[in-house]
Length: 320
Image 1: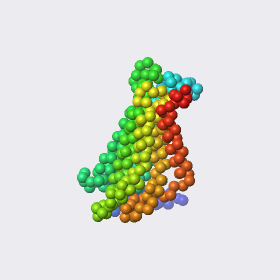
Image 2 (image 1 turned 120 degrees about the horizontal axis):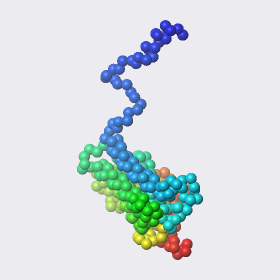
Image 3 (image 1 turned 30 degrees about the horizontal axis):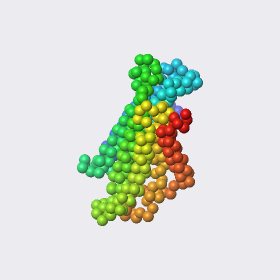
């Protein structure tokens, strides 16, 4: 190719075609939300990010304590000794943070993948069901923040004397269990607003019998209420104060397993909705028949929750 050829081809390659103001170029990347619904989801996502940052800060503080300001970072046995020291207090603080991390991540994945129709509509008025659902979602993220801040850890006290017992004081799984209870009850409220009330028009609601309405509540809110009962059992059986670190650890493990059990139990809504007419279910996306793997996962997690509830009450007697 000659210099003349290059000179004649370059203008065609580097000079873009004139832009028609009436038809702007279509770009694949447009970060600005186009609808109010997208703005709402972005706002809730920012709240999730704030809670995740709070949990990350707590995990960072725990790493500082476990590694003794990173002096033991290259020695796993010494780090393990630091975790075991002072009666496993540091392990309790870690489990508190892990509970908050699991609750936030599981909820974020479930919320972001939700196909609820209310996520696709804008809020027309503050006197609307959509606005109430939006408030419920914000309240849920507020509860997640409360869980992340409920750990009995004091990093400023640790910086003064460098003792793990100063970092974790009077641990208990009861505050977390009551907060998880509130989370599941709020889940049930969200399910009620989205799946029980919303899909039916007022014309359908008027002749709807009380029995049929309670049947829908049981079908679509039953899993959340069942997990709320399990969290309530943890709050009853775990010591409010004066318990051992092992009892607190089993209480936190029961709550973590309960969060995963909530996801594992969702496919079983299939059995709860059997025999319900299309007029009764509305446009709710019904669950498919749970697979054998999903069944085994559910029974394993339920057994684990009940076992941990037993251990949070009787660990000193069973393990001596």
